[in-house]
Length: 191
Image (cartoon, rainbow, N blue to C red; front, side, top):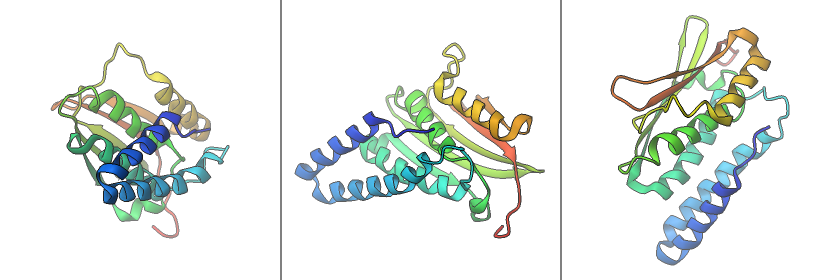
């Protein structure tokens, strides 16, 4: 079961406190993003089965999270979403996309002085939904192991989909990293 990272909440509240004194309009904007994020994430965290979410909800949550991170990292973080609207109703497990984005920022962009860009992409190939989080950061360290977040995603995918889903880590030719969740795509009545 996912948990909101306490350091994320405390850092965001500290940022709001600082901005109240220096830039009240920006403080109000970040406060609004935090409310959006909590409103979207808390119900998902109570979902103990780990299923029942949609890609659209995960993208909405990710947008709120990334807006807060952009307020913290300023020009060091750029964001791109390439998710077609019709995939919004596609079933997608809660909090997995968020974990990939957090890893990308923590391991790819924060160590890079200039920061970089996070790109969230979704597409269907055959009967498989591909949801990718890429960055142009320092790249994936093969000696660092997979970490708890990626191990948890692999475990949840196996529980939910068996051998029909996978987590794939790639190093693009231009550098950085791309982590992809691939799972069966099921058309819904909406899409």
